[in-house]
Length: 448
Ligand SMILES: [Mg+2]
Image (cartoon, rainbow, N blue to C red):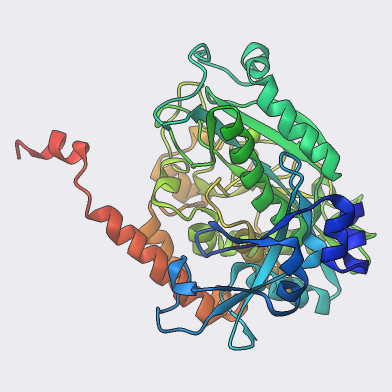
């Protein structure tokens, strides 16, 4: 459902919307390949021209595969995405699609997702998703969690620690209520200093735009309160990391019928649903660099046990019923929870990769195999996994990127330009990391 602001925007010129809502400036915003939000702040008097032609950027100055010699890149706002900032109502935020030389930039993340949505629509499908964006509230200098009293060994759902951050959490939740996102619960999560806030699932592009905006909003409101919010996958090595579990269901074109739901299907999932799952599982290692895109991501998945007793992050490419120790959980009939994604995933590429793999599974009737009703956190030895025919997730970003680079499925769906650009920039990130000498190396190698 479009919000009131979105419906008005669709009918009126944005300059008129600005006058009626008291908006003085618009942020024309796009995310680069690393998921960083980039914007221009445009006065309302100039917005109608920008809606027609886009705001100009030098693409090379962001994490996109461009050169300083390239033409101007234009971010053309999608007026239906308008969100008036609840904490600064004189500013309106617009998600934009990037173009260059009159053509859509193939590796622009929002363009990549739009192409997958179009491919699904051609087959009569519409993906709906919801994301669980975990984050830590830390001190402004980033050195530690912000609440020195938050020290419990098992801090999940801790009422005292939650209420010590009531001013921040309630301001974010109030904002989501005002925006019509349907927020329904907030909690202290499994790590000291960690929180999670949930809002309703929706069409995949709506969720991706909201995911981008949620991160912006949480960081902004935390800063207003003298704190800092981080979605970093593993900001503290001994604590549970920040996941971005994604719930997904595929619907008919009208969005009325959940095609994953089958009353008589195993755990309430249809044959089509299991084929979608089969596609994601078959390509999970190739998707890993998109779901877990940073060097730090691999310290969340495949991690040793944390002080709370569990990492809550997967280690293996496996699925199960209502059991949180696998990569995929079936919590209820008609949907899957993908638990692999982390807080650093690009909100558009994450959903695009999931949809592309799922559609591939449907097209090829991919069998996901049998579900495993076991505690996967106790099944970590290589020989046990071999016996179960379960593959492990890549152990680092380099291995993950090599698999993405070779993925026929990702190249034929997200496109060669997208995969080449992504792997090139992320590989540079990996190389930059390897040039750092760590204390661990000195501690373990000085006496070699
Ligand atoms: Mg959680």
